Length: 327
Ligand code: ASP
Image 1 (tube, rainbow, N blue to C red):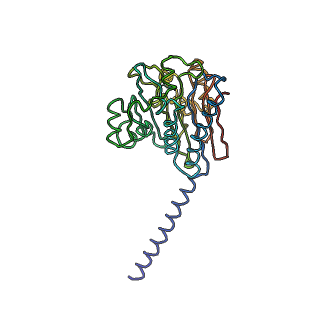
Image 2: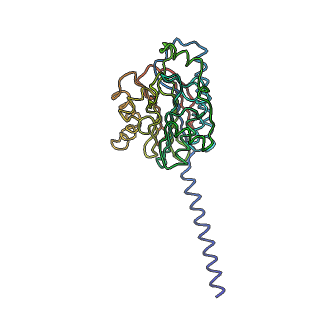
Image 3: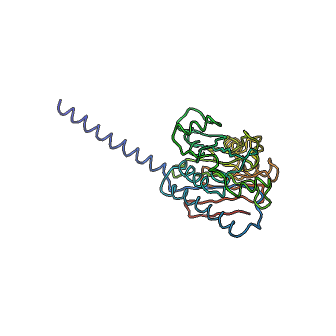
């Protein structure tokens, strides 16, 4: 009897050690030391005549944003955290059209849109037309994680932000002298109204996430919503294929379901990320519409745009670290 129970204990201990080892090995197999991250700060007509100081400010801002994301991923962090933190920084940076520095609507106020998607389970959160949320990307993530919904809009989204305890600001907080001047002039000839921000990353566990945040198009109608908070149009992520964040004339990206179609062309037609992105941006959209940044499940990245410039950057585990504005 005694012999029998010690045998049972012995077998139990052995199975525990075996299962534990199996779990550790499986985990180790899933974890690589590879990651890739891409960011954008909008696409459009960006004159090469912009003053050196302005150019430097953009390049520096892109470098800081990229470093934030790269460090999170290099330490083994999750792509969803890298995407959120990069975009939060860009929302605080008045050079970009998201958060502080967002463009004005035709009514002279700010209405912000953002979305975030996790390619592991296709979970998504988005907000549109928020007016008092300092970091719309964080509220989008809260929608993803704390509600059963995907998209909250306008006063309901602002109210949810207050309830959940994200940072609240007055709508004038988003004002910047440059945007006000542009709005008054209606058209700025040097840097036009683009400047949306986005980030896509794949982490060491092979999880792809994507996010986009914007003030929308300058002078937009009160209540207008673009592609940025719309999953499938302005943002998409799927571990089976790729992650995408778009920027440009939102109406065109919505009509052409750009972000999802890039993934679909890869999944259903076997196109590479570059072929799929170029099909949508260079063949289906008319010149001047905008562009996308994307990363695929193998860690390859693509910038595809049909505008003269796009504020963008890429970093990966192989030591690549690059930011660019024009070709
Ligand atoms: N796509 C954004 C929108 O239409 C604007 C932009 O990317 O510049 O709201």
